[in-house]
Amino acid sequence: MAKIQISTSLQISKTPKEVFEAIIDPAHMTHYFISKSSGKMEAGKTLDWEFPEFPGSFPVRILFVKPYESINFEWDGDSHPLEVNIYLEPKNEGNSTLVKVEEKEMEANEEGLNWLKNNTAGWANFLACLKAYLEYGINLRKGAFDYMKTEN
Image (cartoon, rainbow, N blue to C red; front, side):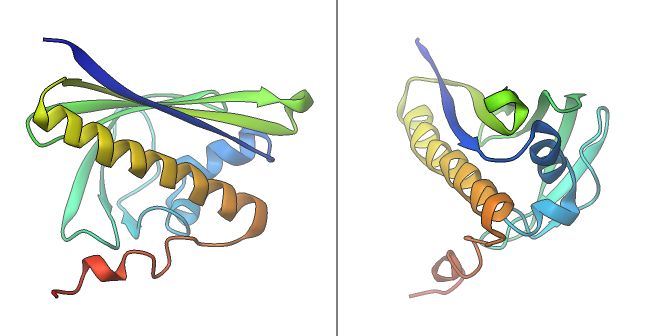
């Protein structure tokens, strides 16, 4: 069966160093993506992330970190671990950064297509929130998913 993967990107008007620090450091990441982390993203660590819209914590296994260039981690999908690669590419003489996110991979079946839809939206949201936070100091997620916590 064919395999599918997620790939999305967005340019941010900050240096690769600024973008990298905003991704690996929970002091930043809790202002635009997660609500809590058990530590900084460093190779070999397993972190617990919490999200404001989902109950419980999610283990994140940091596989590889290359400062200002890439972050590679693995987390659990519904049926198996999924690998996430975040690449930072300098643009405009290093004054901005193209951030590319890849998550792989799933079978091209119903489970895989649901994952592709949901996580592609999730990574696009991550990038938009990262951009808003770094460029304008805005937390786009604040209150955005409160509807998910209430029962209708």
